[in-house]
Amino acid sequence: MNKHILRASLEDASLAPEACQVTPAHAERPPAGAEMARVLGTTPFQMALDSSGAGIAHWKHDPLHDVVAPMSHHVIMAYNGTVRRMERRMGSAVAIGTFRPGVVIIIPEGSSSRWDIPKPVDVIQLYLPHATLERVAGEVDSATSTDLLERTAHPDPITSRLLLTATDAVVGNVVVDTLFRHQLMDLLATRLLAAHVGAPSTFQPTRGGLSPVVLRRAIERLHSDIDADVSLAALASDAGLSRFHFCRAFKESTGLSPHAWRRQQRLEEAKNMLRGTDASVISIAVALGYSSQTAFAAAFRKLTGDTPSNWRRRAR
Figure 1 (cartoon, rainbow, N blue to C red):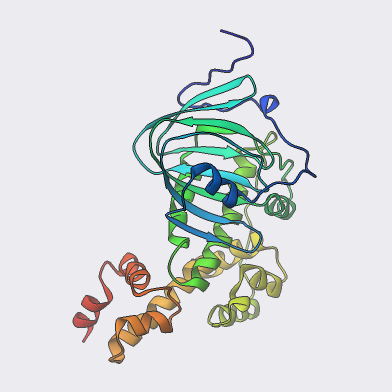
Figure 2: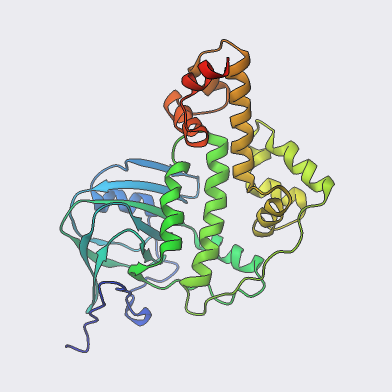
Protein backbone atom coordinates (compact mmCIF):
# COMPACT_ATOMS: atom_id res chain seq x y z
CA MET A 1 0.00 0.00 0.00
CA ASN A 2 1.27 3.47 -0.89
CA LYS A 3 2.38 5.10 2.36
CA HIS A 4 0.79 8.37 1.23
CA ILE A 5 -2.65 6.75 0.96
CA LEU A 6 -4.78 6.08 4.00
CA ARG A 7 -7.23 3.28 3.31
CA ALA A 8 -9.56 3.35 6.29
CA SER A 9 -11.71 0.42 7.29
CA LEU A 10 -15.35 0.41 6.28
CA GLU A 11 -16.38 0.60 9.92
CA ASP A 12 -14.13 3.54 10.85
CA ALA A 13 -12.87 5.58 7.95
CA SER A 14 -11.43 8.53 9.93
CA LEU A 15 -8.80 10.66 8.25
CA ALA A 16 -5.62 11.24 10.19
CA PRO A 17 -5.58 14.79 11.65
CA GLU A 18 -2.24 15.55 10.02
CA ALA A 19 -3.74 14.83 6.60
CA CYS A 20 -6.37 17.55 6.94
CA GLN A 21 -6.19 20.55 4.64
CA VAL A 22 -7.23 23.53 6.72
CA THR A 23 -7.34 27.11 5.50
CA PRO A 24 -6.06 29.96 7.69
CA ALA A 25 -8.55 31.19 10.26
CA HIS A 26 -8.58 34.67 8.71
CA ALA A 27 -9.59 33.39 5.25
CA GLU A 28 -13.06 34.24 3.99
CA ARG A 29 -15.30 31.21 4.39
CA PRO A 30 -18.95 30.72 3.44
CA PRO A 31 -21.53 29.60 6.00
CA ALA A 32 -21.99 25.85 5.97
CA GLY A 33 -25.58 26.04 4.76
CA ALA A 34 -24.61 28.13 1.73
CA GLU A 35 -21.66 25.92 0.80
CA MET A 36 -23.72 22.75 1.12
CA ALA A 37 -26.42 24.22 -1.12
CA ARG A 38 -23.77 25.02 -3.73
CA VAL A 39 -22.13 21.60 -3.62
CA LEU A 40 -25.32 19.55 -3.43
CA GLY A 41 -27.01 21.61 -6.14
CA THR A 42 -30.40 21.53 -4.46
CA THR A 43 -32.39 22.97 -1.60
CA PRO A 44 -32.72 21.19 1.75
CA PHE A 45 -35.76 19.07 2.46
CA GLN A 46 -35.97 20.98 5.76
CA MET A 47 -33.73 23.61 7.36
CA ALA A 48 -33.65 25.77 10.49
CA LEU A 49 -30.86 28.36 10.76
CA ASP A 50 -30.26 31.27 13.10
CA SER A 51 -28.65 34.60 12.23
CA SER A 52 -25.13 33.20 12.75
CA GLY A 53 -25.70 30.44 10.19
CA ALA A 54 -25.74 27.80 12.93
CA GLY A 55 -28.52 25.29 12.61
CA ILE A 56 -29.85 22.00 11.33
CA ALA A 57 -30.61 20.83 7.79
CA HIS A 58 -32.16 17.70 6.34
CA TRP A 59 -30.86 17.00 2.83
CA LYS A 60 -31.97 14.46 0.25
CA HIS A 61 -29.48 14.85 -2.56
CA ASP A 62 -28.30 13.15 -5.73
CA PRO A 63 -24.86 11.55 -6.24
CA LEU A 64 -22.05 13.94 -5.36
CA HIS A 65 -18.67 14.39 -7.06
CA ASP A 66 -17.25 17.73 -5.96
CA VAL A 67 -14.93 19.57 -3.57
CA VAL A 68 -16.44 21.00 -0.39
CA ALA A 69 -14.72 24.33 0.27
CA PRO A 70 -13.62 25.46 3.75
CA MET A 71 -16.64 26.61 5.76
CA SER A 72 -17.20 28.91 8.72
CA HIS A 73 -18.88 26.17 10.79
CA HIS A 74 -18.12 22.65 11.88
CA VAL A 75 -20.41 20.25 10.00
CA ILE A 76 -21.55 17.07 11.73
CA MET A 77 -23.64 14.57 9.76
CA ALA A 78 -25.68 11.47 10.46
CA TYR A 79 -27.06 9.18 7.78
CA ASN A 80 -30.73 8.33 7.52
CA GLY A 81 -31.17 5.64 4.89
CA THR A 82 -29.85 2.48 3.28
CA VAL A 83 -26.14 1.67 3.14
CA ARG A 84 -24.09 3.83 0.74
CA ARG A 85 -20.40 3.63 -0.17
CA MET A 86 -18.47 6.90 -0.35
CA GLU A 87 -14.94 8.22 -0.79
CA ARG A 88 -13.32 11.33 0.67
CA ARG A 89 -10.02 12.77 -0.58
CA MET A 90 -7.80 15.37 1.09
CA GLY A 91 -4.62 15.85 -0.89
CA SER A 92 -3.08 12.39 -1.18
CA ALA A 93 -5.07 10.99 1.74
CA VAL A 94 -8.13 8.90 0.88
CA ALA A 95 -10.82 7.55 3.16
CA ILE A 96 -13.28 4.97 1.85
CA GLY A 97 -16.26 4.43 4.08
CA THR A 98 -19.86 3.39 4.24
CA PHE A 99 -22.80 5.59 5.11
CA ARG A 100 -25.02 3.63 7.46
CA PRO A 101 -27.17 4.35 10.51
CA GLY A 102 -24.98 4.74 13.61
CA VAL A 103 -21.99 6.43 11.94
CA VAL A 104 -21.09 10.12 11.77
CA ILE A 105 -19.12 12.40 9.48
CA ILE A 106 -17.33 15.47 10.84
CA ILE A 107 -15.95 18.26 8.68
CA PRO A 108 -14.10 20.66 11.00
CA GLU A 109 -14.38 24.38 10.40
CA GLY A 110 -11.91 25.48 7.71
CA SER A 111 -11.15 22.05 6.24
CA SER A 112 -11.67 21.07 2.60
CA SER A 113 -11.99 17.74 0.80
CA ARG A 114 -13.35 16.11 -2.34
CA TRP A 115 -16.35 13.83 -1.99
CA ASP A 116 -17.45 11.04 -4.31
CA ILE A 117 -20.81 9.53 -3.39
CA PRO A 118 -22.19 7.49 -6.30
CA LYS A 119 -25.80 7.17 -5.12
CA PRO A 120 -28.50 9.45 -3.61
CA VAL A 121 -28.18 10.22 0.09
CA ASP A 122 -30.55 11.17 2.93
CA VAL A 123 -28.58 12.95 5.63
CA ILE A 124 -29.04 15.23 8.66
CA GLN A 125 -26.43 17.97 9.09
CA LEU A 126 -25.64 20.14 12.09
CA TYR A 127 -23.82 23.44 11.50
CA LEU A 128 -21.97 24.25 14.72
CA PRO A 129 -20.00 27.48 15.32
CA HIS A 130 -16.62 26.97 16.91
CA ALA A 131 -17.65 29.57 19.49
CA THR A 132 -20.25 27.10 20.77
CA LEU A 133 -17.59 24.44 21.30
CA GLU A 134 -15.38 26.95 23.12
CA ARG A 135 -18.25 28.14 25.31
CA VAL A 136 -19.26 24.61 26.30
CA ALA A 137 -15.62 23.68 26.91
CA GLY A 138 -15.31 26.71 29.19
CA GLU A 139 -18.39 25.65 31.14
CA VAL A 140 -16.89 22.22 31.87
CA ASP A 141 -13.85 22.25 34.13
CA SER A 142 -12.15 19.24 32.54
CA ALA A 143 -12.52 20.29 28.88
CA THR A 144 -8.98 20.34 27.45
CA SER A 145 -9.32 20.68 23.67
CA THR A 146 -11.71 22.08 21.08
CA ASP A 147 -9.86 20.80 17.99
CA LEU A 148 -12.31 18.51 16.23
CA LEU A 149 -11.01 15.48 14.35
CA GLU A 150 -11.97 14.67 10.78
CA ARG A 151 -14.37 11.74 10.82
CA THR A 152 -15.61 9.75 7.84
CA ALA A 153 -18.21 7.02 8.48
CA HIS A 154 -16.99 6.83 12.08
CA PRO A 155 -19.06 4.56 14.36
CA ASP A 156 -20.80 6.68 17.00
CA PRO A 157 -24.40 5.61 17.65
CA ILE A 158 -24.86 8.21 20.40
CA THR A 159 -24.04 11.23 18.23
CA SER A 160 -25.88 9.71 15.28
CA ARG A 161 -29.03 9.21 17.31
CA LEU A 162 -28.87 12.76 18.70
CA LEU A 163 -28.52 14.17 15.20
CA LEU A 164 -31.41 12.15 13.82
CA THR A 165 -33.67 13.57 16.54
CA ALA A 166 -32.81 17.01 15.20
CA THR A 167 -35.47 16.71 12.51
CA ASP A 168 -37.96 17.49 15.28
CA ALA A 169 -36.41 20.96 15.54
CA VAL A 170 -36.83 21.86 11.89
CA VAL A 171 -40.61 22.26 11.77
CA GLY A 172 -43.27 22.85 14.38
CA ASN A 173 -43.62 25.36 17.21
CA VAL A 174 -41.07 28.12 16.65
CA VAL A 175 -40.34 28.89 20.30
CA VAL A 176 -40.26 25.25 21.41
CA ASP A 177 -38.14 24.16 18.47
CA THR A 178 -35.66 27.02 18.90
CA LEU A 179 -35.22 26.06 22.55
CA PHE A 180 -34.78 22.42 21.54
CA ARG A 181 -32.26 23.31 18.83
CA HIS A 182 -30.15 25.31 21.30
CA GLN A 183 -30.25 22.49 23.85
CA LEU A 184 -29.38 19.97 21.17
CA MET A 185 -26.42 22.02 19.97
CA ASP A 186 -25.05 22.26 23.49
CA LEU A 187 -25.60 18.55 24.07
CA LEU A 188 -23.89 17.66 20.79
CA ALA A 189 -21.02 20.05 21.56
CA THR A 190 -20.57 18.21 24.87
CA ARG A 191 -20.57 14.88 23.06
CA LEU A 192 -18.06 16.11 20.47
CA LEU A 193 -15.70 17.32 23.21
CA ALA A 194 -15.95 13.92 24.88
CA ALA A 195 -15.46 11.76 21.77
CA HIS A 196 -14.15 13.68 18.77
CA VAL A 197 -11.24 15.89 19.82
CA GLY A 198 -7.55 15.10 20.09
CA ALA A 199 -7.63 15.17 23.90
CA PRO A 200 -11.16 14.06 24.87
CA SER A 201 -12.78 15.72 27.86
CA THR A 202 -14.39 14.03 30.83
CA PHE A 203 -17.40 15.61 32.46
CA GLN A 204 -18.24 15.65 36.14
CA PRO A 205 -21.97 15.25 36.82
CA THR A 206 -23.77 18.31 38.12
CA ARG A 207 -24.97 17.85 41.67
CA GLY A 208 -28.25 19.30 42.89
CA GLY A 209 -31.05 21.14 41.16
CA LEU A 210 -32.26 24.71 41.08
CA SER A 211 -33.38 26.52 44.22
CA PRO A 212 -37.18 26.91 44.57
CA VAL A 213 -36.99 30.62 43.77
CA VAL A 214 -34.82 30.14 40.67
CA LEU A 215 -36.94 27.21 39.49
CA ARG A 216 -40.15 29.23 39.87
CA ARG A 217 -38.64 32.10 37.92
CA ALA A 218 -37.47 29.74 35.16
CA ILE A 219 -40.94 28.20 34.88
CA GLU A 220 -42.51 31.67 34.67
CA ARG A 221 -40.19 32.41 31.76
CA LEU A 222 -41.04 29.11 30.08
CA HIS A 223 -44.73 30.06 30.26
CA SER A 224 -43.95 33.29 28.40
CA ASP A 225 -44.94 33.85 24.78
CA ILE A 226 -41.93 36.12 24.22
CA ASP A 227 -39.13 34.32 22.37
CA ALA A 228 -36.38 36.23 24.15
CA ASP A 229 -37.74 35.22 27.56
CA VAL A 230 -37.62 31.50 26.83
CA SER A 231 -34.28 31.35 25.06
CA LEU A 232 -31.79 29.02 26.70
CA ALA A 233 -29.36 31.91 27.13
CA ALA A 234 -31.98 34.01 28.96
CA LEU A 235 -33.05 31.14 31.21
CA ALA A 236 -29.47 30.33 32.17
CA SER A 237 -28.47 33.96 32.68
CA ASP A 238 -31.45 34.61 34.94
CA ALA A 239 -30.45 31.57 37.02
CA GLY A 240 -26.84 32.75 37.23
CA LEU A 241 -25.61 29.55 35.56
CA SER A 242 -24.01 28.51 32.30
CA ARG A 243 -26.34 26.97 29.73
CA PHE A 244 -24.67 23.61 30.28
CA HIS A 245 -25.21 23.62 34.04
CA PHE A 246 -28.67 25.21 33.87
CA CYS A 247 -30.03 22.41 31.66
CA ARG A 248 -28.67 19.73 33.97
CA ALA A 249 -29.92 21.48 37.14
CA PHE A 250 -33.37 22.10 35.62
CA LYS A 251 -33.69 18.41 34.72
CA GLU A 252 -32.54 17.45 38.21
CA SER A 253 -35.36 19.59 39.64
CA THR A 254 -38.17 18.68 37.23
CA GLY A 255 -37.22 15.40 35.61
CA LEU A 256 -37.43 17.10 32.21
CA SER A 257 -35.14 19.26 30.10
CA PRO A 258 -36.33 22.86 29.53
CA HIS A 259 -37.42 21.95 26.01
CA ALA A 260 -39.32 18.84 27.14
CA TRP A 261 -40.99 20.83 29.93
CA ARG A 262 -42.09 23.54 27.50
CA ARG A 263 -43.35 20.94 25.03
CA GLN A 264 -45.34 19.19 27.77
CA GLN A 265 -46.84 22.50 28.86
CA ARG A 266 -47.89 23.27 25.27
CA LEU A 267 -49.47 19.82 25.06
CA GLU A 268 -51.56 20.48 28.17
CA GLU A 269 -52.67 23.81 26.72
CA ALA A 270 -53.65 22.06 23.52
CA LYS A 271 -55.65 19.44 25.41
CA ASN A 272 -57.50 22.11 27.40
CA MET A 273 -58.40 23.99 24.21
CA LEU A 274 -59.49 20.84 22.41
CA ARG A 275 -61.58 19.67 25.36
CA GLY A 276 -63.03 22.99 26.49
CA THR A 277 -63.57 25.01 23.31
CA ASP A 278 -64.99 24.61 19.83
CA ALA A 279 -61.96 26.26 18.23
CA SER A 280 -60.77 24.58 15.05
CA VAL A 281 -57.59 22.53 15.12
CA ILE A 282 -55.88 25.02 12.82
CA SER A 283 -56.78 27.97 15.07
CA ILE A 284 -55.43 26.09 18.10
CA ALA A 285 -52.23 25.38 16.18
CA VAL A 286 -51.85 29.09 15.40
CA ALA A 287 -52.64 30.13 18.98
CA LEU A 288 -49.96 27.79 20.31
CA GLY A 289 -47.33 29.06 17.89
CA TYR A 290 -47.06 26.13 15.50
CA SER A 291 -45.99 26.83 11.94
CA SER A 292 -48.88 24.83 10.48
CA GLN A 293 -51.74 22.53 11.37
CA THR A 294 -49.65 19.63 10.07
CA ALA A 295 -46.76 20.48 12.41
CA PHE A 296 -49.14 20.76 15.36
CA ALA A 297 -50.82 17.45 14.54
CA ALA A 298 -47.46 15.70 14.20
CA ALA A 299 -46.24 17.04 17.56
CA PHE A 300 -49.54 16.17 19.26
CA ARG A 301 -49.55 12.65 17.85
CA LYS A 302 -45.94 12.07 18.86
CA LEU A 303 -46.79 12.81 22.50
CA THR A 304 -50.27 11.27 22.72
CA GLY A 305 -50.34 8.62 20.00
CA ASP A 306 -53.44 10.21 18.47
CA THR A 307 -54.48 13.09 16.22
CA PRO A 308 -55.97 16.25 17.79
CA SER A 309 -59.37 15.59 16.19
CA ASN A 310 -59.58 11.98 17.39
CA TRP A 311 -58.40 12.95 20.88
CA ARG A 312 -61.06 15.68 21.07
CA ARG A 313 -63.83 13.26 20.12
CA ARG A 314 -62.83 10.84 22.84
CA ALA A 315 -62.30 13.54 25.48
CA ARG A 316 -65.80 14.94 25.18
